[in-house]
Length: 167
Image (spheres, rainbow, N blue to C red):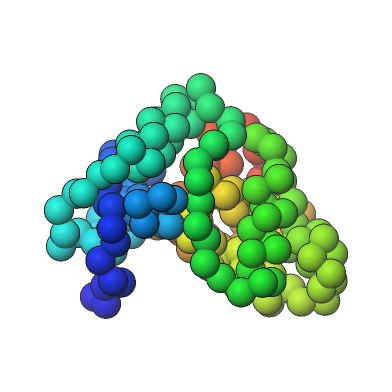
């Protein structure tokens, strides 16, 4: 398994969708990973929590209990200008609200860039917090999910928020 560079801060927590790992740079949250087949990107490192990651863990626990619908955390999401535009639009979605790949393309000025939109959604470094699980294909279909164990993870998140979808 290829690992990414060591983060400044690192914290793991258990959740209903498996273990989650959050990383930070000392002033912002930089990534959130959901275990895939039980493995996280930095399993080889010890936890090094800071106040931001402790707050992220608290807010995530609230989300999974149904007590939080929006996250309030400093985020440093690195990506291209287009990716950041897609993530900004995702961050505007409210609890239980969905969008489509086509709507994201329209909102970011690239109405025919479905593949690029899908790539940007999949590259979201902080899923759940920036709710990429709220993107569905035509007919409210789930076509994929880059976090955790893929479609089952996305289906759990959608059901948790009361969002109806087609299998």
